Length: 262
Image (cartoon, rainbow, N blue to C red; front, side, top):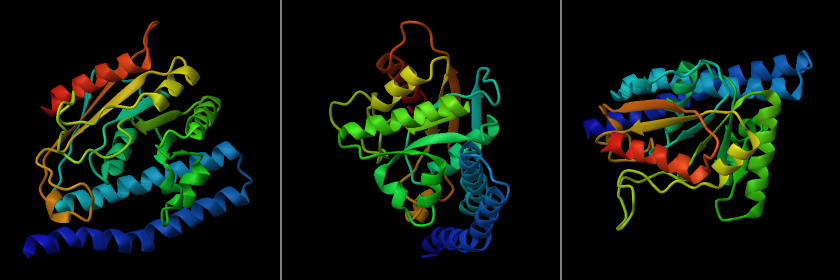
């Protein structure tokens, strides 16, 4: 019972801080943009900055309360502030908080995301995702999905900013299927990533591997499953060379992730 209560407390704190701190901060940023007649690109940047600053704030509050330790290790040299294609595995509903910390480490304050279609209607956050210019996809083979990703990639190239996606398309639940190549990951999907390679020539690929060692849940509602998790976050850059294609680059990245997770 004590463990269940300890797992629920961060969720309650999250809700309170969301209403008392984050909402007023978002309102202030939007008023600032409106009063000073900011451009569309500046408004989009303002929305993403609010999102990532909020995520980092909750990371600093919630993770210590739950005893979660996910230190970030950078492998090799990654130029700070450089626009890139950010590609991550996806294990939990709070991976976004960790990725916000990774972006902060890499000095990336404006990153456009590929998100599932339902997220544009998410309570509180959906309208901000739409204002930021994110691409929303159905993940059901709808041809319009690729059009949305392409539009977002072109906007990122125009603004000179980064893009990001969870290449697995959905969260891995921790249980591998029979006969799969990867035991700790889902098979990466190449569609969106291929469009990024086509529309953003010269952008390096930055892989993020989140290793939730010992995790038994996937969402914050599984509070006690997250308690006292001590994992790792591995980040490395893959510079593209002539002849690279989406499948070979993703396979190489996922093979390295599988090795780290094993």
